[in-house]
Length: 204
Length: 204
DNA sequence: AACGCAAGTAAGTAGGTGCTTGCATACGCG
DNA sequence: CGCGTATGCAAGCACCTACTTACTTGCGTT
Image (cartoon, rainbow over all chains, first blue to last red; front, side, top):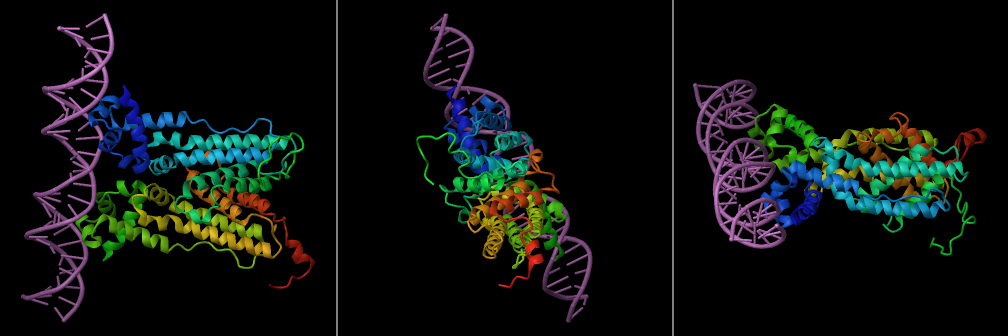
């Protein structure tokens, strides 16, 4: 049963490159180094195979987390955004094809939306916590702010590859987004670096 | 030569629904109420037809504008964002398919990127103008802010339809995004209703 | 009437695509 | 050994897809 795994991986790659329509069973089989018949014997149909590849793919994602007790919003958010960006970037090809074909294959919708949901909820919860701790402007529009950060991350991860000129350099981007974001929700700089200091300082 | 127009419109619709791969010449011809042969006689090939539909489509877009001389940033930006959102939303199906197939059809890239570029440049220029008029924080990260607003608009226009729960109600969204955005770049509320009241400012 | 031209009709080609069938081969295990 | 199970291989089926060819029809101009 080694084939199963190889087929799944190959299918993910081919699907990412060509989309569902372009991902022919012949191509997938070749990429897996497996006979096309094996593919049908193992999964039954092309549709079932694609479900088998998208399902786990959306399940086994371990999303970045934000601390329940914020201490250094700028650092924490930067780490979070950096990790999320990498996450989304890794699934970009799959995502972008799935989005295009979502009306024809609604079963892929969950895969396309899960990450976004998690990101949004995580940010929202964190923001509320900041507010209740008096670390963020209590009048800030938490919902809209969360949507904007989510949109920024998705947009960067997805569109940077074909419109690179407009984006900040990839290594600066997360920090700059976060700094803008902090402005937006009224977090004063160094609000509590004094509270808990770590031995390491990060570069500005 | 009535056929030409009808084929172009039909092709746009079918392409929007099914993507390039899914938009078969038979489907397009049927949608146009035209014989399939006519399609080939008029455009030569499926690829040429699709170029003919995407080219003009990206050219005849009249993008929303922002005034060269800002007077009421909140109102002006809200109008701008509202219009842009509607614009992008209208091309969403086409956009989303094109993005998915951009690697296989690079000639569609310009279509997919043009709007984004224009939006970004317009916002950036406007922001700089605000800064130079002292209406926005001179230390604001204009580039990052512009990217974030662009990302927000694209994300809302594209993803709202399959993740509606996380977005603000459609009629509130632009105003709320803009208010967050103003926070981000340090535009004080009524920054210049007061100016108007107090005295005349000289023209730059 | 004669002509040109846009469009339709019918048929076909060459290749791709999802999926099936029948049969041969290898490996592991009692 | 014998048997089941996984896999490979060759061929094929029915259908789709882009595109072509050859011929016809209708309409406007001269």
